[in-house]
Image (cartoon, rainbow, N blue to C red; front, side, top):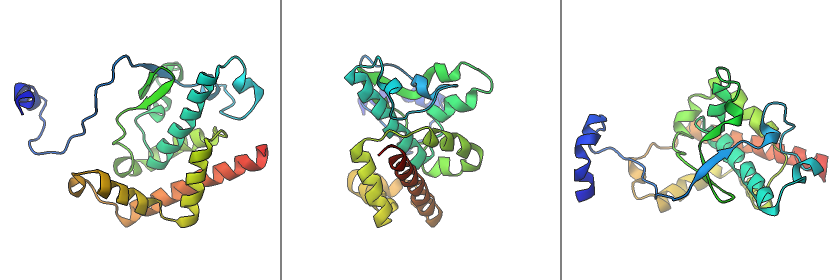
Length: 210
């Protein structure tokens, strides 16, 4: 409490409302900027399994590429507009945005750190009409998947329980879950539909490269 009291004046000046839920994350030292892989930049061919992707990359760098696959899937499922999509959207004013550091993404060594994920799901689902084609472009640029991730997507596609499992996780792990927005029928249907899109992309890629 003493720590918060010491910044009470700044919080008031920033017009923070008293009693609101906020997200706190641990401080991570020595983070560095993360950049979109060249394969996903303008003129790139996307993340597909081929010799060009592995050429001149170490195993650690290839591991980083696989993390980009997970990032694209996560941000597609949640319709997150505040990471790679942010760079894509702002490219209309700045041609170098896709070669600039990615918003809300950092690195520690070759490990990606996903920051500020709360704009996904509830808020971002209301913005799908405006941003859907950016998400679609990213998903369609992807044909490399971690086996564990692909297996989970396939299981959730078959069970039709992705929203149910997210709600269960929130109830189990989030002490303030009762103060967070609830899943309504539209959110449930949208999340399952986007999971279905990811599944179809995985199956399409498997048919091409297996």
